Image (cartoon, rainbow, N blue to C red; front, top):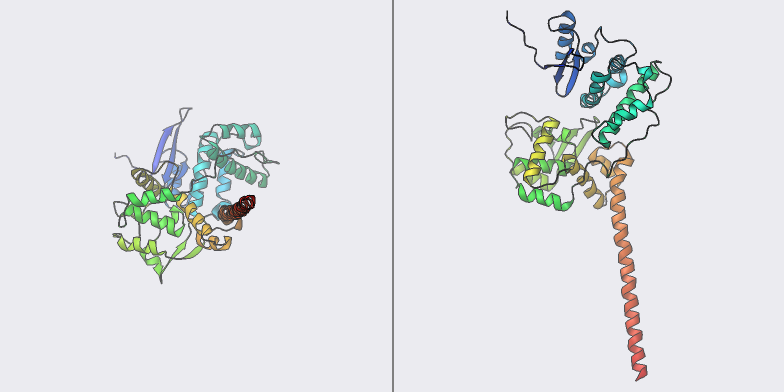
Length: 359
């Protein structure tokens, strides 16, 4: 008898010797109960395959009051179901490993020291803070369900991160990439789309020629759902005209398929390496460079919001603060330089008059 294959299913043996199976597709991992062929497994697999993780997540082995049960309840909540699919995948990428490792632990026994230990075990401050955010969110849901009276993650401070996340590309780095990848190349088109629209990689990979009309490109941001109308910069227009675009999307894989956001990020990193761009300068760093350029051109925080799609003035104000500081410093030094020059002229004249009087 032929054994049935289950696409997207991965299996592994945990530290207790039990075999666990997960459905994994497009970055989403869903636990599957039972053994292949059993009613519970087949039902969960069918639900996951149909894109209905809510049904797949629920298994008879999920004990009440545990982290696994809390995760199931959260996935069924209006807060989670109201998120964009791309945001749901981000949440799951952090929550599922916790569920996999600690799913059988009672939520009401979770203490601050446990959360701090989890944070300390992460790869770095950024990962630790990300974990804290989602643990806090899950436990807040447990408070709403009245499983616990207080959220032990409240008040735990984030770990300090040197710098401000993704590194912003300086002009010298931008020129270096442009010098290596000429107009007409796919890496240059990707670079120009990122820099001259200021959008995230998840939005750039969805941009299509049909989105261009009347000298502008229409974008609906994947993360926020924000619709944007963006005039096409002359340099971006030249880059689009020079590029060989075979399909509907501006950017496609070597197989003629659309990029995923993660796949594009890896591909773009390779092109940065080829151009000699230092590690740490990513696609998102070009979004920051776009914000800086807008601020340095004198754009207001509201104008920057209109281009980048930020929802709060505080986010856009980060760029204007830096530009304002630069302009103010230049103006201050110009003033003191002018004053010093004037003082030197006065001193020179006084010295000349004094020397003539002495004669």
